[in-house]
Image (cartoon, rainbow, N blue to C red):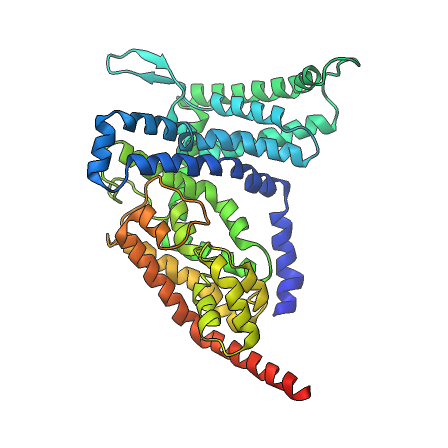
Amino acid sequence: MKDFMNEKVVPKVMAFINTKAIQALKDGLLYSMPMMIVGAVFLLIANFPIPAFTEWLAEVGVTPVLNQAYNSTFGIMSMIASVGIAFTYVQNEGYKGLPAGVISLCCYLILQPQSLTLADGSAVNAIQGTWTGGQGMVGALGMGLIVGWIYSIFMKKDITIKMPAGVPEGVSQAFVALIPGAVIIIGVTILYAVVNLGLHSTPMEWIYSVIQAPLQGMTDSVGGVIGMGLMVPFLWFFGVHGSTIIGGIMSPMLASNTAANQAILDAGKELTLANGGHIVTQQFFDQFMTVTGAGLTIGLVLYLFAFSKSAQLRQIGKIGIAPAFFNINEPVLFGVPVVLNPMLAVPFILMPVLSGLIEYFAIYTGICPMYGGVVLPWTCPPIISGLLIGGVRTAILQFLILVLSFFVYLPFVRMVDRTYVKQEQEAQNQE
């Protein structure tokens, strides 16, 4: 089985992962993540779970300031993604990426509605936060990839304006982007005209209703939870960084679900399924499916640290215990190892699925609340992260799941421990 997976499955998975599009998506989206986290901090302060504090912020006029910062960071994540993906695609091809990022931003804005009808019937021009945030994510991804691809073709074919020697590099680079930029923007404008005149809509609205909304629905389901829960540790089992790969692919939908939930709260509505709330969000993935590392290995680490009879495993437990509380488990994955170890494959792959399903039904039944826009750094320690994203009930559930991980890993790690003890005794006898 190991040979079959290494020879047949893993190469195909890696070939897909290493495609230009997936690499651009994975790396380009990282440009939006810091601003999402920074924006979430302002949101957390503005909605801190102490009513007296939030009322005081509103009275002194601080709340609008915090919301301004949030809307200008977290609220433009799709806009940042459109720039980052095109930039990364072109840069990976060996060319300067910023011109492509700027072109992608312009095209992304062309695709979306830019007017609002006021209560008195008059219309005003406006870039709408609805489309710069979560609802515009798929359109931003597509635009970033298309612009990066077309721009790279122009660069490879050398279809550019060349300035004479002696012209400053900044001026020269600006003219390099002129021809591909003009062609791409004209094409996107024609697309806008076709959709606007033919469907009386905009491309961004059409993409959201036909593509993004169904994808978010698929992600926000029991099947989506099981799929993500299985794939992350499955890839890690073969030494492939499943958290980065699956997280990179799923992040657009998860972030969109998070933004949609916050939009419900911003509208003054209760965050419920009836009001269109999403259960599976970025916080769901980070704090319940990869918390303490892929495979939720905290139970394994605690056994190694406190109960292992093997000197080698006990030493790995000492090395891995501190990083585990910051969601880093590579010392254990490669030290035990868990990677390519069939004796630990079952709990390693099973535990994220169990955790995801427990959390899904806890939110579905109302035991735990849905998540708004507070997104934490992935290194935030468990329990603290649960408290910040969902309050006391979420922190308690997170603690119980971490305890469960110990018992799920227990019978399997005991077998590994006995094997190592036997090997260590044999080595001593030979000496």
